[in-house]
Image: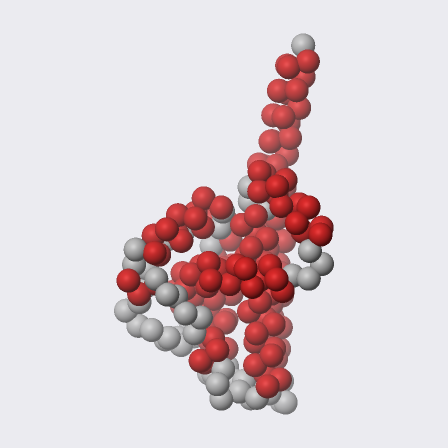
Length: 193
């Protein structure tokens, strides 16, 4: 009788997770990325900035944000791991350098700092979305999120793997965006998500 009750409780917990919590986390992720995109737009439209809508750094970050919004439903642990494994075998994506620092070379310190903060916030949102897509990872890492008050260490640890996801999200955003800011033409990965 106890095992039946336990099984029913676990099934109920899984149902809550699969049908409510995961959808809620996807909505939270999208809203956070929309907020970042809106802040980027507001910053570019302000008068006291060197960033304009045609600047390559703006185009790259905007397209990457749009790409993550578009593929939010598909951003799960299994797909992220599979994408990272596939990216290791694609010659152009083995190193996957982050192009943003090179694109920001002509900007002043304040604008560079704003774009770096926006990029790091995007990476943290992606990391949270991936972790919270799995009930096992959520339970396993909950103490980590509670103990780590500074998220900069977490962003630093995930910088290289997330930058590979950035490449796919950037391409997804470019494929469906009216703003075309090519970084590396011919460097496309097939729709990984």
